[in-house]
Length: 229
View 1 (cartoon, rainbow, N blue to C red):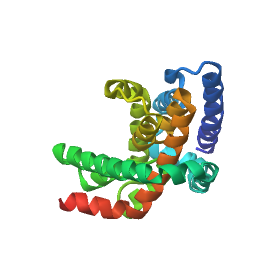
View 2 (view 1 turned 45 degrees about the horizontal axis):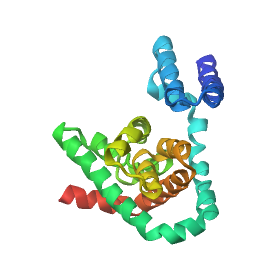
View 3 (view 1 turned 180 degrees about the vertical axis):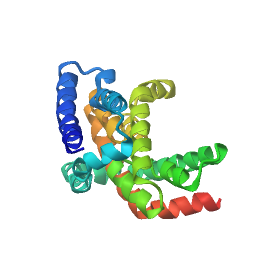
């Protein structure tokens, strides 16, 4: 058991480092560490018959770093404080609308498929990046494990299909595109926005952080309003 636990821990760190190195050498979207790492880790878990609960237990110290890492989100806010001051009304409008749409659509989908309470509230919390989503899920009685999975799937989908969606919208405004990526696809979307344009990356990063802070503070109230409606 200890050997398997140590192996999972080492695998997680080593594979992510290797995946990141490969992506830097050939930065195509399907070689993103989020995709390659996830696929290979799931394959390993299937091969060794390791459940998600076991894997999460073995790598809990890595997951525990998400909390302290949240503090680092203050850095880009400080670095781009001038941009945030100029665009704050637009950013906050985009965030509020985006969060209501994200949480509301998740609730409607959950009702459509008759999901139970835990899955429903975990889906509703997945509209922000993982550290914030886990905090929100705890407040609204969702599942930290489920919301982590839902958040990653949401981010991957946004990163993979964001370009196509924005192409249909014919938007040429970096502010709008960046806000869309940061709102809808969180960290993965921000990464893609940076590749597209530096200004889009800045706006996406600010939107992702502000949306996370907004949802931790106001998310429980938004969830109650949507469920009540």
